[in-house]
Image 1 (cartoon, rainbow, N blue to C red):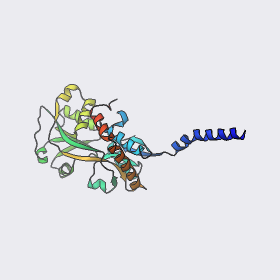
Image 2 (tube, rainbow, N blue to C red):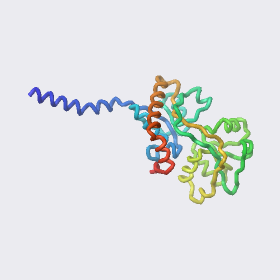
Image 3 (cartoon, rainbow, N blue to C red):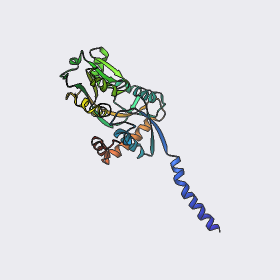
Image 4 (cartoon, rainbow, N blue to C red):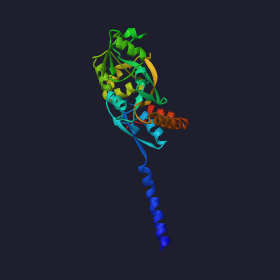
Length: 257
């Protein structure tokens, strides 16, 4: 009888162990915004960048909960500690004062989209003077573009919803849109007709190209340790070949729902 009781106790503990272990799983909050095909709550895995981030943390025993916000609010949330981290951001001097940056997750290329009935030929930023350029709040397009905007050399109209810029461009309400190349085409497929998409093109000359990163506020406790944990998982995922695999899958449209 005693043996049977012990056996039942062992079985009960064995069943309970997975539940106990899962209850101790660490969960962190990551604020982000819509930026397809890299980040979107309407895509499989929430987009390729979100998949890379989630699986990098998972390799280190951490689960992610995403909050989808306008980009400026997403940034503010990580600064004030409402979110543990935010995805994804380019490195700037200003942001570096407040944030810790992970190892690079993806590389982006910013280009200028224009209407084919008004061809765009430019060699330097000053050639864009006199044009109305659509841009998005909170986005960084490179130091040269930012300096030109701040100094008034170029005219930039910013909006909180990136797709609005492409609608304006198709309607000839602005002259050009600055956007990440892959993101631009993804947005156009979502909000424009096939005829409108055909009427637009982008300049082969890049405005800027840079890497994007997970960010953590310098104010939060153990922020550097959390970042180190993420980088460790990202290194494992990269060395396994899965990061490159996921990027190729994204470019092939496999993350579309």
